[in-house]
Amino acid sequence: MTLASLLPVALASPLLPSEDKPVYWLLAGDLKTAPKGGWGDGFLATTVATRSSGHNYGHSGAITASFRAGSNWGKATKHMQTYKDRYRVYVTIQFVHNDQKDTSGVSLDQYKAKLKSFADEAKTAVAEPVLLTPVTRRELFREQSRYVNAIGKAAASKYNLVENDWMHLDEWGGVFFARIVTDLLVEKYRELQQFTTDNSTLSALIKQGKPA
Image (cartoon, rainbow, N blue to C red):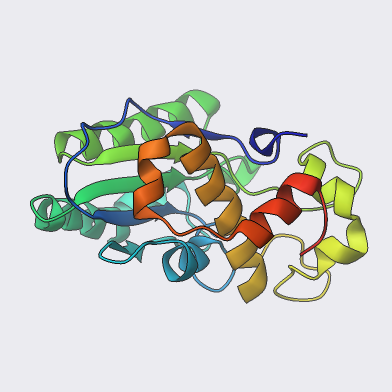
C-alpha cells in the first residue's frame, strides 16, 4: 500500500520557483479543515517548520459559495497580499462535504467552477493554490480509505470528536490526518520538505496501515 493511496492530494498548478523564504500556509475549507473538527490546526501546530507559519480559515458548515460570501475568503486573499513579500504563500483549498448535499444548491459544474475561481484568484495574488481531496468519513466497509479500513472501526473511532460522529476529528485525529496531508505533499514535491517537520514514527504507522 502506498501513501498516495490513503488520501490523494492534487496541486492546482506547478509549484512556484524555489526562493529563500519560509512558507505561509493559508487553509481554506469546510469542517474537514476547520478548527475543532478538522486537520487544519493540527497541520499548523505540528507539521509547519520553524520560520514558516500560517492561518486556518476553515469554517464548519461552509460550502464554496458561503465561504466566498462570508468574510473568510476575503480575509485569506488579504493575507496573500500581506505576506507575499516575506513568505512563499500556499493556499490549501478543500471543499466537498457540504457542497455535495442536495440542499446545497451547488451543481457539479458550479462546484468545479468555484474551485477554479479560488485557485485562479490565489495565483493572481502570487500565492500557490493546493487543491486537496476531503478526509474520508472513516466509516468501515466504505472504499474511501485503505488505511482506515485496515485499522478497523474501533481504532478509527478514536479519531472522533464525539462518540459515533464519523465526520469531525478530535485533536489527535486532526494531528494524524495533518500528517497524512504533509507526507503526501512532501512525497510529491520534495522542495516542501524544508518547510515542514517530519514524524517518522507516525508516518511509518500510516504506511503500514496500523493504528496510531
